[in-house]
Image 1: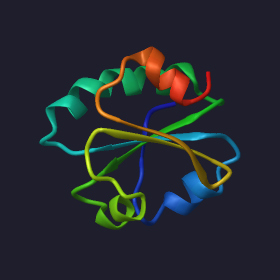
Image 2: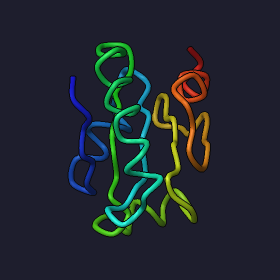
Image 3: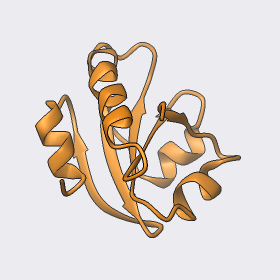
Length: 104
């Protein structure tokens, strides 16, 4: 599965009502660390297909979601299970750290 691109329109359906955990990468086009994380995020999306949804929120395009989750720095990774935030991490991470964030 490829990375989902979240908007205010699909957020409830794809995240809040998801029956599997969702890892969200809050990012921006101008953020170099975000760009450096992108291949790792894509790799996890492929490897964890069916077990975890991996999604991205562009903070410049989705300011309401950015405010809702209190995102102050990027990249920020938020894990949501059953509609609730269960884990969060800010800054560049290696693949193992992101998997730990997911509880894997």
